[in-house]
Amino acid sequence: MNFNIYLDDRTGRQLVIAAEQIGETKNALIRKAVAEWLARYNQPAWPEAVLSFTGVDDMPPFESGRGNLDAPAVDPLA
Image 1 (cartoon, one colour):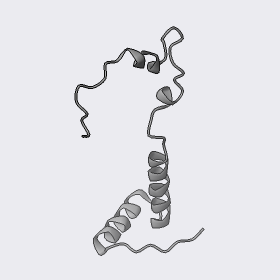
Image 2 (cartoon, one colour; image 1 turned 60 degrees about the vertical axis):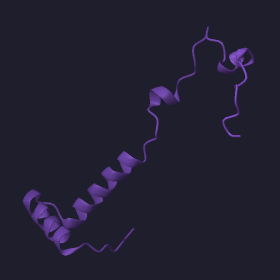
Image 3 (cartoon, one colour; image 1 turned 30 degrees about the horizontal axis):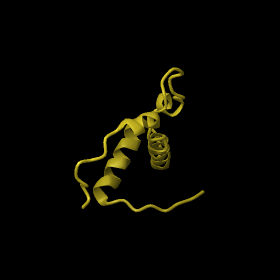
């Protein structure tokens, strides 16, 4: 897939210098930068340990204690 991108002069000069220094083409550097950015920002917001958590077997459900709560003394939205 082909794209045209436009860089400001300063960024363009920095890209040319970096490409020359490491012996890569500008296009190769841009491809790598975009791939790294996508790999970093396409991650789920929560770590896998949190996403795969299924609970603790002997822990009662959170909602089970709702009936023991006192009603608020004053309606905070009134």
